[in-house]
Length: 318
Image (cartoon, rainbow, N blue to C red; front, side, top):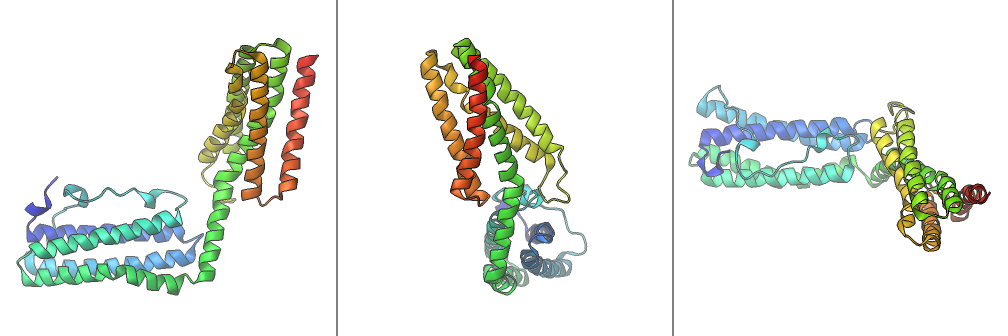
């Protein structure tokens, strides 16, 4: 990597052109990523892309006047001092808050680059352009706020936040909750049946571990193969499958771990307490993200848990 202080005026202009081109493409990717679900935000980033394109045009015009047609390839990763950018533009779905924060950081970094570059150059026309671009980047945030008011009035923001919440529920909460419910409830019967039948904590632990892992693998593949998310908007199938499988295993492991306690009665009581905590957590999630009334959520979750628990007790005691 080359030190910033070692760059010539020709290289500074070439680097500036590369930075503007990269920012323009990033904003274009942001706009494309938001176009379907958040058209107002997509329009905001399209406006920012157009401004970066105009900056690049000015830089290229001055470069050609000073140094000719060939522009050397100098990228931000070739010069020390630039901050690594997380490739948010490649991630789907895009997160509104994260993208807006990243855009703000991009503008600050570019402004500081122009300010430092203008202070180093001796050519009057180059210095003037760099100073002008620094001023434009300084007020770019103001322009973004104007775009925000123009393109994203309060009612549109509320609609986009509601849409983002729905996507989060569809892509993360629903598969996670399905897995947690299955893991917490379906493994109750084999775990407690094995515990009461053998009266041995270790045997119950092994049964619970096998049931949890097996259920996690099964639920993970079932969720991943259910649909590809292209029509339902539920996101990448393998991500959903991973979330569902992991939460299924976690739900079963929760009331399995207490059976590592050597004392059987203590392990049994501890496992029962964990079961109550799990059912309480599922009830809260249903109320928080599914808008299910407290009483309804508690009855639905509790009834299923009690029935499976009784089944395990009856089988284990027979």
